[in-house]
Every structure is written in C-alpha cells, then in structure tokens.
Image (cartoon, rainbow, N blue to C red; front, side, top):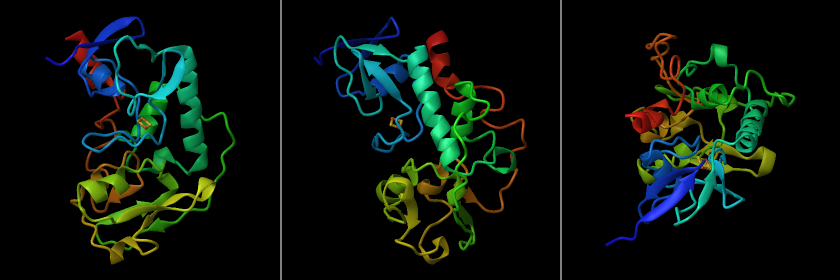
Length: 236
Ligand code: FES
C-alpha cells in the first residue's frame, strides 16, 4: 500500500500521492498554484518561478518540489503574491508585450496571470529591447518580442515532436530561443501541427492565417480568470 501523504496548503489539509509534486497535489485538490513554464505533459522545468510557494518557511518551486508528509505550504499569502507580481513585472518590461495588438490577447497566460494578480501596469521601467520577428515559415510566425523563455517550445519540440527545432542560445540578459541554431523557421522541419507551436503560453509562436478566428470577448480568459477551472473542482 502506498503511504498516504498529507500536506497543508494555506491551512487546508491536502492529500498527495507518492511521487506527486506540490503543484500536482494542489491541483488535484482544487487549489490553483500559478504557473507559466509548467504544462502537462512536459517534464517540469522550474524556469519561470511563478509557482513559487513557501514550504516550511523556505521558497520552493511547486512544480518541481515533491510533496512530502507534513509540509506546511504558503500559496496565497500577500508575501507570495507580491513575489509573483514582481516576477511578472520583470517579464513584461524585459520584452515588448503590446497586448492590445497581440493576436493572443485573451488567450495569453502571461496576460491572464497579470490580471489574476491584479497588475494593471508594471512598476519597473520598460527596457524596450530590440528583438526580431521571423515570418519565414509559411504557416508559423515567431515573434521574439513576446517570448518569456518558458522553454515549453524547446521541451515540446524535443520530447513530443522529436524534432529539436528550438533551443536556447546566449546567457543572462542575452539568452533567447533560437531556431536550429540561428536558421530561420522556414528552413526547418517545423509544422503548424507541432506541439511546440500550440504550447506557447504567449504570442511568441503564432499560427498564420488564423488571426481573430475567436473574437475578442469569447477567449479563454475574457470572463474567467486563469486557474478558475482548477478551483472549480474544490467547489464541486
Ligand atoms: Fe514552476 Fe515555472 S511553473 S517554475
């Protein structure tokens, strides 16, 4: 018999199965922990740190930290929410995110996380970096202005599509996603049906010819906040 694990998230007892991460156990119990780089069925990456919680008083990423019996976890405290707002602020000012002109608006997870955490405008100054747009592929566009380096496309291309179209190059502030080490996307075997394309949480990888098929006002997060589907489970 597998040992039962009980963790406490914001004063609520949550049961976990051995091998589950804190994020998975929380989700199963209808507790939403914000995330950007984590997505089923990809392996956890621990890159964005938006899922940061306090575990027995220490900061940990819930998407990578295994649940262990007796953990006391802080998720929705004002301290953690402020930490997550700072991370989102940095993501917004490090790129060029013009939400009102972006086809992903309303379906964008970065935008939705900002709304969930009550961000109207970043507190940090915009950096307005000079980034490229790659429209060389007949069906897909890459807009590096909107990339948040979550690595979903990198992992999905390798692990789901078996292609390795996307990789990281550079370090620190110069780190970016590259296409087959500096080629244009049109020179690769990327397909519009690849998991790598549909898993982009923002508008960095966009399918051409589908613009505004879903009207504004009918998109994923136009009426319900991100995470509401998970929290519903706890109500039901
Ligand atoms: Fe956990 Fe990104 S979702 S680090």
